[in-house]
Image (cartoon, rainbow, N blue to C red; front, side):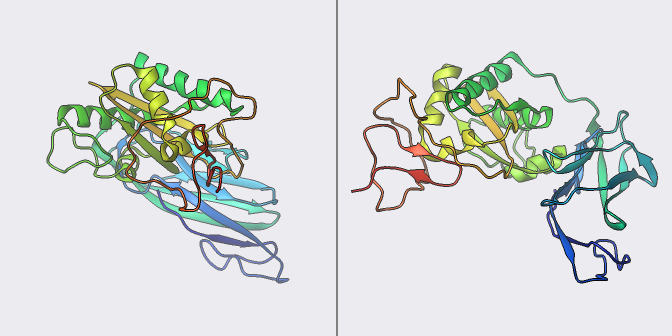
Length: 306
């Protein structure tokens, strides 16, 4: 995926691929949040996406073409994205993508390339029972906080499963992979997401020695820094993997603003302590814990102060 900024002027003529010249100095700024895929992908039917923030401005038109041929892309205002997923596999090799948006008579365009690997698969695997169970447990916790349910994403399920399989096969635990190891799919989460063609932001949690799925997911949730991944205010995408006691969960980060407090007002059966090791404790020195598990939000921790 790639990120950048795009400025569109309300009135004027096109000066370039992504910038329109001002006629009356009144401008509308569009921020490109992400677009792609932009690298070599291992999926021949990737979801081709341009995510942009249009602020309060409504698009009057949009479109996309692949290799010069118009395609039936869709615009989802809730996610501020233009999306097209090929119904038939793209041939291995490089493909040219061009997308445009219009505001009134003004137009802005984004062009990029996709390279489909010779080994790319056309159809991602169906969700396994363990993946559905993990999603159910996560959504049950979100329901306690009055948050919308996350929805399964085949690409995030695939990436999560590949990482869980890698960790189990190589007897490792962590977020990174080592090139040359069996089942290697990418050093970092970003590398693995790019390789399967996921566009957007995501965060990953990893649990080792998980004897039972439900309690292990709850233990991950109990750790304050890991809990933040569960608390996106939007109905975002989600994927999971499980292999030999390793649980990987990949949460899309929607970027949508919102305050989420955990535990929720009136929530019961809150443990009074937790035991979980975190490599990063994101709490200010002046903040101390209360009797309950520390409350978390998508941006900061709320605890009692001395």
